[in-house]
Image 1 (cartoon, rainbow, N blue to C red):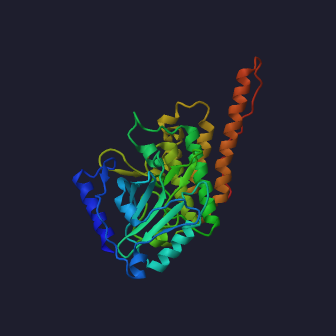
Image 2: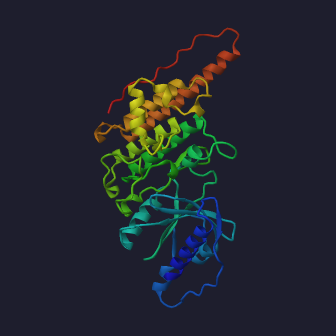
Length: 363
C-alpha cells in the first residue's frame, strides 16, 4: 500500500521545511481515504495488529489523521508522538532497514508483544507492509533518561537526583533480567531507550528489535567489543551496555563525548583512566555533589559499572547478580538514611556502623 508511504514522505518534507527540530510540531494533512473494500489482501495490508490486553482502538486511517510530533531519531528508526482524535496519545516507531521478511517480523513481534513487566515498555500494536513497519508503544510524558541527563540544564529540565538515578538503574536491571529470563536479549540498551514508569523506576523500550535490523546499525558507545553483529546479541553484551549506562548515570557524560577540539572520548576508557590515576572523585557528575553522604554509594555503583564493562564477556557478572548488587545499594541507602534520621532526633547520638562497599566481584 503506497498511501502510508506517501503520507510519511509528506510528513518528512513538512518537518524539513520547518527546520527539522524535535520540538517542532507537525500536523498530518487531513484527507479523504478511499480504501479498497475488495479482497482480503487489501484489508490485511491496512491492518494494525493489537496485542491481548491492549485497550487501544484505532485503525490505520485514525493514525494517518492524528497530529504528530517527532520525538527523536534513533538507531532503529524515528519515533513520533501521535495524538489521536479520541484524545489517546501513543508513541509510534517507524523502523528503518528491517532485513527480515514478513513471517519472521511477525514472529518476533509476537514474542516481544507477550513481554509484560513493570520495567519493560509494553508493545501495544504493530503494522507491517512491504513499504513500512510501525510499532505502537505507550507514550511517556517525561521523555527519555537521555533527555533528562543531557538536555539543556536550566529551566524546564527534569533534574535527576541520586535517588532518581538509583531507581533508574534498579528498574533497568530488573527489566533486563525479565527479558533474559524469557530467552531473549535486548540488543540496544541505551539512555534514549529508557523511560520512567509510574513509580519512577527505569523502564526499557525497544526490546528484541536488534535481530530484525541491519547489523551495521549499532548504538555507538554502548556496544560491547564482541558485539559485531547486532542480530546475534548475547546477554553478556547487554550487561556491557548496562555498565555503560551506569557510568553515564554517575558521570552525567554521554558514552561518546567531545574533549576539546574534535577529539572524541569513549566514556569507558575515560573512567578507567581516571580511576587508574586514583582520581575517582573526578568522575562523578557535579549535580550529584550537592547530595550529602552518598559517596560510598556512588563508589559502589561505579564498581558495578566497571565490572559490567570488562572486555572479556565471561568475566562480566550475570544480570541476576547485577540486580542483587544494585538493589543492595538501594537497601543500604535506605537503612543509612533511616539511621541518620534517628540519630538526629536523639539527644545522645549513638555510633553507627556504615557498611563498607565491596571492592571486588565474583564472576
